Image (tube, rainbow over all chains, first blue to last red; front, side):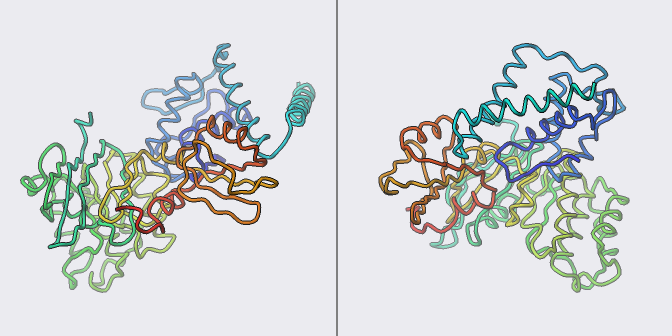
Length: 131
Length: 303
């Protein structure tokens, strides 16, 4: 369920971090539930365990994962509210990625903004229906 | 810096008569990391590895492992180093079982269960003579034996040569497990770029005996990119890549494909706005593609 691409320019540890964030957001990893051990995940993905460990380290610093001594790594029960500055950084980084993708494909600024609006609309509608 | 490096080469050269196999190579490998030494055949990798494991005295320069000179202390150092050479040698009439039993007595620490488990996973026939195993299987036998001795440093010379896809996958899994369990430092020469790409921390590329590149894989993959763009209506020749440095530029019709070796987002944006070129497509490059860009074709580039 966790996919990485060693051929990508994005460092593998960052890809793992992003994937775990994605799985958390999608509800595939639940609060308080276990995540694979560094060893198992490294073996599954056939990557250097130090790489997985680095991704987990980042997620722990972000307060999303916790190590229970002698037991393993778990998703925290209550995810920490994101600090405003963190949220801004994360949004800005994602925005740069989206903008460069859009420009790479030759899209105009208007076109790119319109798609972003539309995506917000769709997600908004989706969450409202769900709750 | 790097005072705790597991392996350190200082200005190492190897000459055979007039021929220079290794030309003034310096590098260091930090603890628990995987160093991938790449190069085309005849680039000097094997000579370098032979110096690294004390099988050969460099003509010039010093190799140290755990801070001690390999050549002077090789007998005592080698108990902490596991070596799988390119062409592993063992008495051809002995069976795998006999070789394993023999080796068990040579190592201070020996993991008998581990070696049995690995041989089973590698699917090695244990009762036929070593001489009748394939070259790939011999290397797997040796790797199993070497890992059972719990080495602190593992030196693998082209470990996947002669292995099929399944066996290669198993070998890399074995390495990953070893790294996870013991944090073993690994120096590996290989032509299997897709295999090593996911586990290498640092990459060295040799060409004509020289180490032409020595860099963390992460930064290497960040700075090497392939750009594709159409230049119409401007003639392709008049488009300047600005401060982007290229290792190759190919043009056909209105299209240009350039391999850039110092990519960053800001330089790209500047190029995009200054050149007026439309539809710039940026793609990442695999280690294999980067290797070809660095060590490939262009002859006479080094003089």
